Image (tube, rainbow, N blue to C red):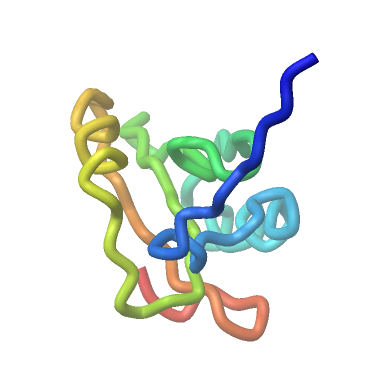
Length: 98
């Protein structure tokens, strides 16, 4: 038997649990003429993906922190994706900035 202790990365504590915001993101993206909204597992590399009318894909990361900065490792992982990355600031269950 092996015991593992998980220590949270306190620098990344402002990420949100994407499954709590699926309805909000479907509505927000739809209102902004984006479709095919896909939710990813909680705290994945990205939280959601969607497409605009031209089929351009965007990756979305949710946070509550207006000063949110991705870790170096997260940035490096995202660089491998061929899509634009958007960070959405969520407050009071609304997207207030992206």
